[in-house]
Amino acid sequence: MSEPAIRFKIRVSASDADEMIAHALACFPREACGLLAGTVDAGAGVKKVVRVYRMTNADASGSHFTIEPKEQLTAIKDMRARGIALLGNFHSHPETPARPSEEDIRLAHDPAASYVIISLAGDKPVMRAFHIEDGADLDEGIEIFKS
Image (cartoon, rainbow, N blue to C red; front, side, top):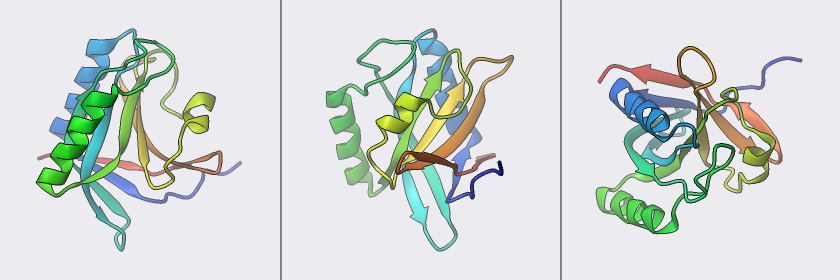
């Protein structure tokens, strides 16, 4: 079976990628979670992350997450004040690969969102981005750039 087509490329600075990985490591063995905000250039097929919001996993679980609602509301208000868009979310998989689980796919209700998953299962963290729609996950591609 061939790899699915890439819908968007997610561009994230090395410092923001480090921030997400640090959050994932700090929450281990629970899943970490957070929101990603930035800009969308649909013509170029690029979503650029300009702000990472660390969130609390209200479930305190190693196999699933729920973003703490009050923190999410505060982050959305901050995004609006800054004039940036919600691009999607990120979460970690403490013991499984960086690909959407069946639960991730089932709970993906926003087809415009990007889902970044950080796996801590190997020797070093692995970060991948996905678009999930109609029960299918499509690799979005992720580019980490020096800021």
